[in-house]
Structure formats: structure tokens, C-alpha cells
Image (cartoon, rainbow, N blue to C red):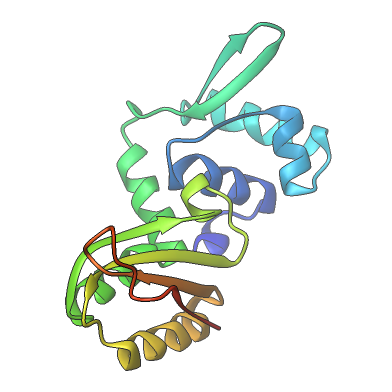
Length: 168
């Protein structure tokens, strides 16, 4: 969906990075993270900054970029990125159908705004439906081509239901 609207792969990576979470980054680290040339990343950073979607701040000799939360389209872009990643649907379905879920926490790369292809999810609750969880993991992989790894913990922090990890 997002890749049909935005034709630059570098721009998509930047939008995913900055609008999936409150992330910041600078040119060289972004180029290294995306395995792209600094020039292609610089061009897209400049375009997004000129459009007002990103803010650039000088920190010493380094220019640090972050999403402009006050841009009129900030929430819409954040919503599109969330839908593109499939996180909203995944978490919502898990919480509704899994049983007694007290918390669902996205951790790992996605929590840091990095699209590594694996979604790490920690569920805290008791008597969760592991059959349905396995079904969701396979459906998520089929639908958005992302692996899902789930860690289940009991609600009492002192007790762990065993470190049960589900994943594709």
C-alpha cells in the first residue's frame, strides 16, 4: 500500500523510521542502517524536511532529524505507517481474542522503529489461547510478510509461565 503511494524506497524507510515511533537519527547512521548511500538518504531527508514532515536540529556538528509532531498530517502518516506495518491490527486482535491479556507490548526492532521483518510481542496475562496465537502468527506472516515472535508472561511478575516463545 505505502510503496504504491511513495515510489522512493529510501523515503519509505525514512517514513517507517520516524513515524512508527518517536525516533530520531542523523545522516550517517541512517545511511548505515538502511544500507543506502549517504547522498540518497540526504536527498530524501532534505525533501521531507522542506515539506515540514521532519525537523532538523543541530547537536554539535551533527544534524539530527525527527518527525514533526505538529505537522497537520503527522497523525495521518503515523496511522498509514502503522497500518503498513500491520501492528495495529495484530495487537488489537491479540488483545480481543487471546483471553485475559493484561498488557501487550511491542519490543525489539519495531519498538525502535526498525523494520527488520520480525515483530517481537510480549503478552502478559493468564490462560491465553495458544492455538489462536499460532493461527494469528501464520496469518500475519501471510498477510504482511513479517515474522512474529511472542513471549508470554503471567501477570504476576514473580511467576513466569515458562518463557514460551511462539513464532514463525
